[in-house]
Amino acid sequence: QVHLVESGGGLVQPGGSLKLSCAASGSDVGIYSMGWYRQKPGQSRELVAALALDGTGNADSTNGRFTMSRDQAKNTVYLQMDSLTSDDTGVYYCSACTVRAVVCVGSGSFWGRGTPVTVSS
Image 1: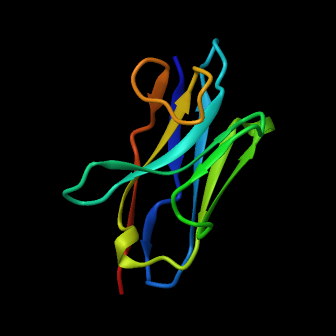
Image 2: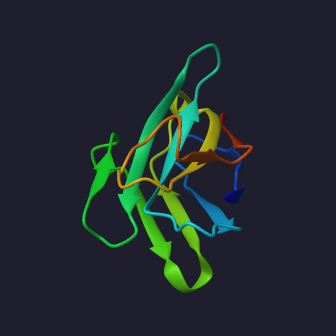
């Protein structure tokens, strides 16, 4: 089992920045990759960014506007979000894959409870 805890969400004005954190614990199998997803109001969950912890792969749906990084010593990944707009509002979820894939669903995938981000003036 993998336990993921997100933090750092909140209310920010348009054009502002936020940095989300996700701390992982509890894995006896080993985490291959971690990612960030978001669920906008009334929409399904979508991938924001993901990366393999060994640096061999990554995914980014933001065209570089958001930056995902990791601190292996702390088993923590981060999502630096800049130039936020109201369209970025949603609940942001951290995920982890224990299968060898940058992005995974179903078996081998684990999820945090999410942290809400609201971009509003």
